[in-house]
Image (cartoon, protein in one colour):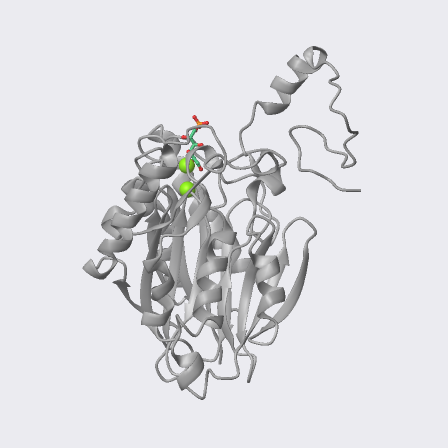
Length: 383
Ligand code: F6R
Ligand code: MG
Ligand code: MG
C-alpha cells in the first residue's frame, strides 16, 4: 500500500496586512480537515502557517491529484475565507482565483506539492514552507542537498546515495519539463536552474531506483491570473535518511541565507531567513522572505510530529547574516538588483511611465546603430 503526502497552501487573507495567518482561519480549516479525517477521506493532517499562507499538510491513501483530497483542501480554504471575510482580514480569499472547483485544485490559485511512496519502516520527511518568495527559491537548496558533496557527505560516503539523483526541471513559461542527471549533467542542470524565475526544480528522484526524494509546488499565480495577485510562496516535501540525505544534510543549505525573489510587492531580491514557527510571520519591508521546516515521521499513513527544525540556535547565525544582507540590499531602494528586473516585476508602473514619456524620447546620434532590438521596459530579445 502506498501513502500520499499532500501539502496544499493558499493565502486566504491575513492579519495586519500580509503579516501572518489569523488563528481563527487555522481553526476553520482544521475543523474541515478533522471532519474529513473522521469520514476517512484523509488519514491525518496538520494545519499551520508560513507567514500569511495557510498550510494544509495531509496524509492519505488516495494518490496524488486525487479529486476528493483536492476538493477537501478547496473546501477548507473556502471555509477559512469566510472567517477571513467576517474578520475583515487583509486580502481575504486572495489566492482563490476561481469560484468553482472542477476536480483538481492546480491552476485555481493554491500551491500544491504531493508525493506518493511505499513507506519505509521508518519514514522521516521534512516539509518546507516559504513566504514572500517563489518556487525557484528552492532550486539552490535542492541542488546542494542532492548534488553537492560539500553539502551532503552521503553523496560521497554512503553507497546508497553514491549513484546520484535525477532532477526534473520545469520551464514554467513553456509548460515543459526536462530530466537531468546528477552528477553527470550538473553543468547543464545549473545552466537552467540558475534562472529560478523560469526553471523550477519540480521533483527529485533517486537514480538507482527512481524513488521519489523531493517535490516542490510550482504554481506561478501571475502566470495563472495574467496579473499580480500575490507571490507564489512555495512549499516542498523532502524524504530523509537511510538512502536519502540525512535530515541535517537536508537542512544544511539553509544555513546560507541566499538571495531570492519576492519580498515587498513580490518585486525585490532579499535573503531567505530560516525561522521557527514562532517567527513564521513577516514585518520589515513585508519580509524578509522566510522559510520554516517541519519534520515528521510518517507511520501507517499517520503524521507523527512536527519537529520545528529551524527553531534552533544552530540557525541563529544564518538569521543574523540574513539581517545584515537585508540592511545592505535595502539601501539600494528602487535600484536593481534589489528591485527585480523589468521582466520579473509583479507590480509595475513602468509601462505607464514609458507611455507617458514616449513622445519626449528624442533620437540621439550615438555614432553606431544598436544591433540588438530591445524594447525598453521589457526583457532584451536578441533576434
Ligand atoms: C508580497 C506581498 C506584500 C504586498 C504589499 C502591498 O507578496 O504580499 O508585500 O505586495 O503589502 O500590498 P497591497 O498592494 O495589497 O497594498
Ligand atoms: Mg497576503
Ligand atoms: Mg504569502
